[in-house]
Amino acid sequence: MPELTIGAAIDDDAAQVQLDPRRFNRHTFWCGQSGSGKTYALGVVLEQLLLHTDLPLLILDPNADFVRLREVRSSAGEAEASRISGLDVRVFRSGHADGDPLRVRYVDLSPASKAAVLQIDPIADAEEYNILLHLEMVSETFDTAQMIRDLRASGDQMQARLANRMENLQVLEWDLWSRGAASVVDDVQERPRATVLDLGGFDHPAEPKVAALAVLEHLWARREERRPVLIVIDEAHNLCSPEPATAVERELTAKLVQIAAEGRKFGLWLLLSTQRPTKIHPNVLSQCDNLALMRVNAPRDLAELVEVFGFASDEAIRRAQTFAQGQALFAGGFIAAPTFVQMGERLTQESGGDVRVPLRA
Image (cartoon, rainbow, N blue to C red):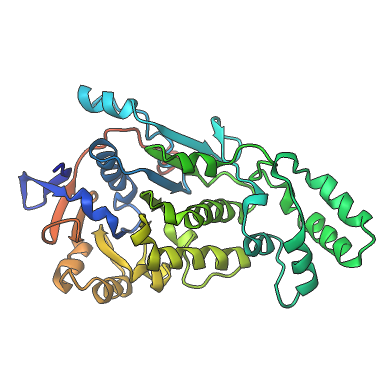
């Protein structure tokens, strides 16, 4: 059975540390404060999954940290470089970045999600919601301007109100929409080895959340196909807040809670990476059976981790306060026993990174 070599033991640098790839069929929580090396280290594990399994990865990437996942470093071994460069890794960019654009079809969203985008409450705005439910949108010919004109020309007051709402909110003008053309969910359905969604370049703050919602709804709607995929959510607090504030955030959080509770038996497995456990919805956090913990100083966060992850001792978790950059505790189903690790080197290029302070020469 292949093992995922991720680094060396902190107390014995000659002892390689390996994860059991079979145990990524449980949800994983990855945590570390800013500067701990969390994103770099996560890349080490994702590379190993690409090299040694056939598990497809769906990476929701808010900071464009993984958009170079198919670009191999010069320091990588020839065999590993050849294997990674030959993998089907698809990257979709938001905003004005070069590359394939990240687009989804509005018409593919569930009625509840369409209503959330348009800020329509099913009870308070019952008549508008009912019109939205029965509004026919043909994906191949979807034209937002024509739809608004048709609604206004209908002579129905509620349809005219819906048209005004669409126009006033301007959500149908978002760059996110494919307007009947190809959608990223079509690629996700093909299960390439990795699909990277760069969520950070959109203008409207709801667009990355709607992009994530569209993909998660698609996966859930087809869950009975039982086609495994590891859903990697970097900076997961942006998508899985314990206190969602908007209708879109509530729909997205509800879908993640559903996947966390029921998705494992369908092959929908989560890997949530964030700086603080208290920023993740507790009904998602409590479903995680694997833990990767990097440096964390906040006493409240450490107490939360101790309470949730009983398979790691209080002492082991609190040692995270002393970790240097790139050091981590791994515990749970994917490793034989709680282990302290100095993470290994990346094989692919890391994007993103901090902006340096300009210094005077």
